[in-house]
Image (cartoon, rainbow, N blue to C red; front, side, top):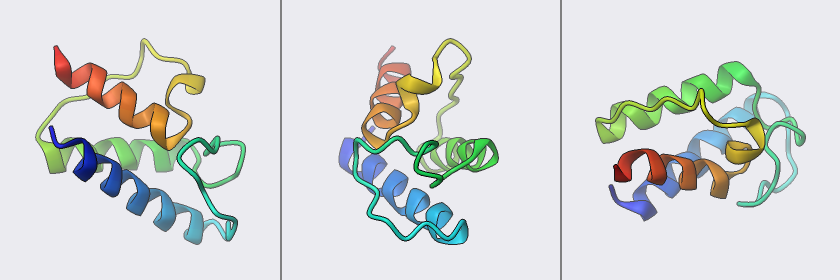
Length: 85
């Protein structure tokens, strides 16, 4: 999986979700997306589906805590870990 393409897709989707939710603050790679109001649980599921569709993978984050995937860097790291096996 191309790490740069994954991160670009995640950033794009997060920006779309944040705009839809009226969040105008800059969202950095280490910003807690839930605390910042950039995404909610439904947005997170849509993000998962977008990544699964784009990269033809199946992701299951049921063994992860929100703190593990609640930032762009964390989400990308979780996806990389899940797809490395």
